[in-house]
Length: 360
Ligand SMILES: Nc1ncnc2c1ncn2[C@@H]1O[C@H](COP(=O)(O)OP(=O)(O)OP(=O)(O)O)[C@@H](O)[C@H]1O
Ligand SMILES: [Mg+2]
Image (cartoon, rainbow, N blue to C red; front, side, top):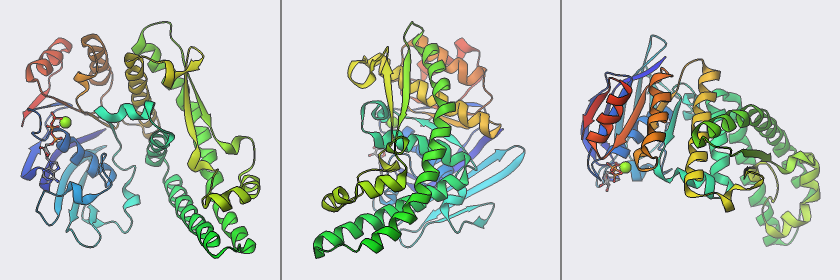
């Protein structure tokens, strides 16, 4: 079981200094627009992932006009206390420690405290480009498989090197085939690793996704999902070989796991183009709940669930179903924000859930 019992924010976004104690499985966070509901959820996410859900820039996470920020959080995991401390001084590397043990690599922390966030702009995962979907898949696998994260980091590093090499070749108008050969060899190993893991993951994940979609949509709609990768037809080594000319004039690596995608169909037609707003939302929630279930199944305990503004997205019945599932059928801790306190309290009362309400 995973619980967050306390978090303290110093100079994190709009918080000067503030501590929150969490006493229940279900925590409602209320306040008007701009009070800091999303920022509070993000600070929790930060402690789990060593970074913000919304931005890669720590400068944007630092309070305006401040030098750095500090986050301190007390978790309890399977009767074990985990005290997370993150200090960002504004210069140099940020310090991240658990139980006073400083990490040498931030990546080591990933997976210790799993969490799933659902935020308003996440609909991009459905409607946007493949990057968002790859990120979602990678975030799930990384929390369960430390080796995957290492290989993914390695892959991205070598990919950058290969791309800058291709640029150099174009600028100097000459190509060092032998050097490219070595680079390709270095790229193929982590590339294949990432591909195989994603393939394995998707096989288990898609049926879960379909099951949740069926429950949410409650109708005779079927959603299909397919993992698409250029490595399915050709081995990665051959692919790089075949694309050499093209990569040469494009000055970048045109095919590989960094182009993988997850494609959705609705009743046999492309989801992106034909789905209604409500159907997109349903698919997004199905994806997120499948993510939650997948992590719980593999970790043996539920991740934290961070629900930002979901009331704006779902009608009352869907909201009731969602909350019933997370609060009643799961033991995981859930944090849920809303601008309307009464709406939140009513939803909890209807479910018979004893929730803690925090008013910002
Ligand atoms: N780096 C920062 N320093 C100081 N304030 C910031 C920083 N980044 C964002 N803010 C401010 O934090 C405030 C709270 O933002 P947040 O998104 O958490 O509000 P919210 O309660 O979720 O509002 P809404 O109901 O509109 O979603 C905003 O006014 C924003 O301008
Ligand atoms: Mg918000």
